[in-house]
Length: 279
Length: 110
Image (cartoon, rainbow over all chains, first blue to last red):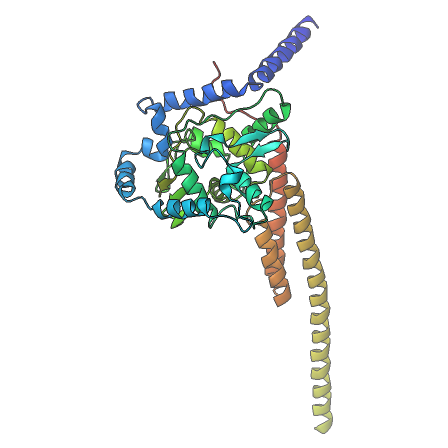
């Protein structure tokens, strides 16, 4: 009986330790995330993670640097600047919605206390358009990438600094939901985001080197040679989910917004360097 | 001789008409059965979707099965519907098994 009681006590204590280990703060998550990569790629400079797979793939990096000499995303930046400056039908423009100017990359994603949700930059841009009687832009392809390219270019050098306000517990809930998404297995291939970009970062999948998750959000939107155009972060989320044979979620729907919140938080401290060019 | 040919013709006619009737009944039964299988697959897909666990190709399979049913290819339609139903069930089970956050052991909190 005594032995049984001792075993039960031990079990309860063990469960307590596991629960305590799981209830981590975002700061602890960030530290653990960064430490994982420090151990995995000890020779990679922290800020070099903004370059994705090219931080760990010297051959791919040579090709990428050659591409960057004549950046394929440049025309998109020019188009975006024209969009930023062109007034809407009512005479107002993006400048009126975002009076601090186009360098607003590091302000998003952010917690919108009033709406009780994560606000992403594309969502804020569309809110601005709709508030001024304009048609919202599609979230994955098309002109949204022009304006995002311009904003990303103007925001280069800003430091990723996602905040999770402590005065609204819903913000932490959204972060936790994004974190849960990141570590959840899904699709026919039964993969979580973390399987490719954390556990197996640096490994070769078919012909590609799996990029580290650290710095994933700093360089979007991205010109992908595969796409032949610039695409948004949520388009990439969609593609990743499809690759594991899961049905993707709606771009800028709750799931992907929360995922962006978590993933961008994991890049806190890294400089923004969008738009980027990738294979 | 004439009597014999009439008899053979009648027998042949009976054989053809009865086999046609049997085929029609079989078709009706199969179509109904396949439709039920497709509906069951769609229910399984919806159940998986309700917990965010729908797989990429399930709805495509169901759509394809419906097309095959319309074309009268009941065997292929039933096979595909069953496959889609299995995906729906597995997607739901997968999502339920992932209900709690499971942090991987290679992430170390110090």
